[in-house]
Image (cartoon, rainbow over all chains, first blue to last red; front, side, top):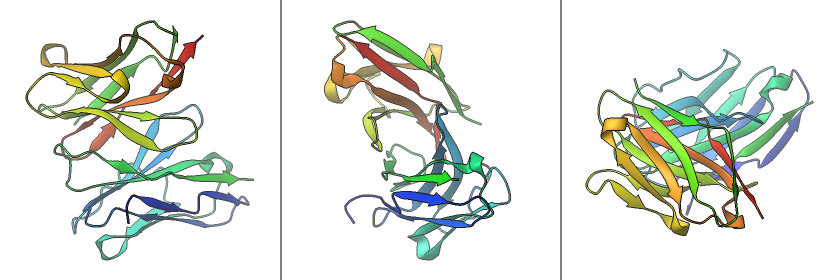
Amino acid sequence: GAGVSQSPSNKVTEKGKDVELRCDPISGHTALYWYRQSLGQGLEFLIYFQGNSAPDKSGLPSDRFSAERTGGSVSTLTIQRTQQEDSAVYLCASSSRPGWNTEAFFGQGTRLTVV
Amino acid sequence: AQSVTQLGSHVSVSEGALVLLRCNYSSSVPPYLFWYVQYPNQGLQLLLKYTTGATLVKGINGFEAEFKKSETSFHLTKPSAHMSDAAEYFCASTYQKVTFGTGTKLQVIP
């Protein structure tokens, strides 16, 4: 597609339920990032996928969070047993090469509200 | 390991005044540096980037930033603020992955 697409754009869920957030990166982009943006906070790195390499999961805040990337393209971020503190905007970004001088292109984000 | 520090989570300037948003990086190797802007209820978009070459980089909407290796800084400036510049600004560095600062919210006072 023309840009990074995230779905849903908004999600309201009950505490304790599981949620899945989807990211469609720009076609051909090998690097994919997930970030979390909470109210009053900056961008919190969650996980990074690069090609077929093992993902960098160092930013995942707890074992309730997991992500996968199928076929080197679409990625799904899963949050199990959601808590109120998980409420945030979850941003996905992709870039054509790891690091280097390429910019990251961001989706519009998924606003997650846990009630 | 690389890190990015943005001094000041909130900055207020009067319309027409100089905008200065500070960014310092820490990296074991010279990084590539970026500024992104996020307007209210929108995603992030690239404002400008430094890769190699000229250390003064010009971006969109009249913004520019200067890479100063000796100071490990990449501060963002604009000579005259407009109301439309009100947004959140993120500095980022890349070496093997993108690392963002915590952001600075710019308020422009009429």
